[in-house]
Image (cartoon, rainbow, N blue to C red; front, side, top):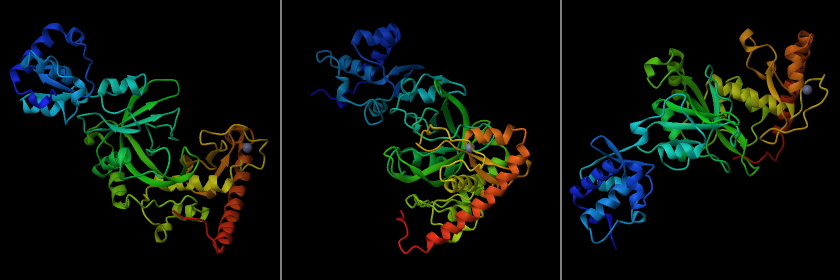
Length: 402
Ligand SMILES: [Zn+2]
C-alpha cells in the first residue's frame, strides 16, 4: 500500500510547489481532482499551499509509475501532513497564524468560520489550528442561555456542555479556564438573532461560578457561569487598572477543584442570601468566585427563587402567556432603587417583575408609588422566604444534594 513515509525526496515536494505556483491554486486542485485544505498549509517561498494535495502530487513526482498518494491514506493535521512536511524540511502554517481574525470580521455561520480557519466544527469555546488564542462564541438564538454581551460592564457566559453536569476539566471549559488562570485575552464572537457571527470584542475572563441550571434534557444540573469583561485589545497594557485588579482578586479567591461544583441543584434562598452577604464561606464547598459579579448573580437567583416564577407586583394584571428559552416564566429581576443611584445589589432591594409591571415601575406617572410598594413587598417576601427555609431545614429528609 502506498504510504506517506515513502515520500523522502524534498525535490519532489518542490516540483509540486512550483506546479502549484504556475497553475494557480484552483487549476492545480482541479487538475488532480483534489480539494482544499482547511487546517494546515505548507509555506514555501512565501506561498501558502494546501498540505495534503501538495504531498499527494509530490508522491507521484517521486514515484511516477504509482500515481497520486491517496489523500484518504493520511491526515492533514499535525500527525500526518504537518509531520511529513517538517521531516522533509518545509515550514507549515495555518490561516489563523497567517491572517488572524480582526475585530469586526463577520461570518455567515459556524461553517463559514470553519471553512476560513479550519479545525473542528465550531462549538462554544474553541482554538483555531496553530493558534493559541481561545475563541468564545455566543449565539442569541441559543442553545445556551447567555447574557447579551456588554462592552461596558462584566457579563455572564454559560459554560460549554448541553446536558449532564458541565465539566471544568475538559473541552471548551478547560480551554477557557486556562485563559482565566493565565489572564490571557480571548476573542469574543457574537451573533445577534438573524445576523452573522461577528468578532465583537476582546475579553478577559474575570472568574467563574457554579450555578444551578437545566440541561437540554430538562434535568437540573450544575452549570458554569463565566464572567467576561470586554477589554480594548489583546495587549494587557491597554486594559484599565480596574480589570487588572479584578483579575488578581478573582484568581486569588477562586477555588480550583474542577470537579466539585459549589452549587447544588437546589440551593436554598438562605444560602443564596448568605452568599450575597458574604457569609457563606463556612458552608460553601468549592468553585465559587467571590467577585461582585458572583454576588450579583446569587442575588438574582435568590429573587427568582423567592418569586416562585410569578410577578412580585401586587398590582400585576397578568403574566405573559409565553415562556422563555429555558421554559420558565418571563420575568425581569429589577433593582427597586437603581444601582447607579446608590441602590443595593441585594434581594431586599430587588423584585422579579413581568415585562408589563417592569415598564410601569419605570415609566408610570406613579413610579414613586410603585417603588414604595415594591420595597415593602421585597422586605416581606424576603422575611417569609427565610422563614420557609428555616422550616425546611428542620425536615429530617433534606433534598438530594450533588
Ligand atoms: Zn406583573
